[in-house]
Image (tube, rainbow, N blue to C red; front, side, top):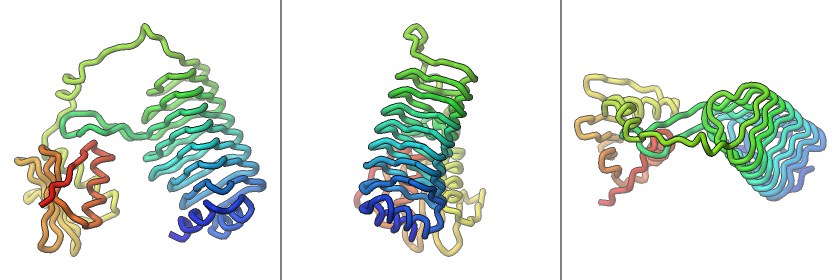
Length: 295
């Protein structure tokens, strides 16, 4: 919390006091680092090398941040997520780049992203319970990789050293060393989404278990799972109960009960913090956006 408060204070301060305050927090900040006012940079563990320049209107909020020497992060870029971002020396991020770090993102030596590039480590929005795909995986860009403007890098992409990705390309999978990628209109294809959904769809009880257990793990909660009662209890705090026959998940807190209807995509109204966290988690991780059912 202290480090985040310092980051908020540094938002209105010039580079010199910002460097001083970050060092007081235990961050490793090199010489001649430029972090001007109107820039927000926060990480629990931060290492910034010599001569790094972070422009105005940049927003960085990750768990672990490592910027190699002589790196430039240009105006309006965002790097955010629950995992880490790292780059080696001489890297470059063009204006208005968007990097989502729900898993780790790394750039090698002398690599860069052109303007308006997007890097995703997660791919989910539509409900996985209906067979829609969801993927979460780190992204790796090795040494001497240049990604030109408006390229989208998908979860799990790994670009080996000495590659150029031309504008507009969507990068997936592993790109071998010494490759140049560009858009070829002849290679566009159409796939059967309905068939994919049928192949991907799993039993309701499977998804309930995945959703509840993953959420509790994300909260670092020690819980007891009773398979017979389909319950997941965090002693003294709350209990989730799976009702696969109705496709409903229940959250019991004390004498209260909150219902999450995954067929109707709605949930009971509640101001409980754990309820809000659960809604945010299943929306991000499982593509389940639930409307509030007001009583």
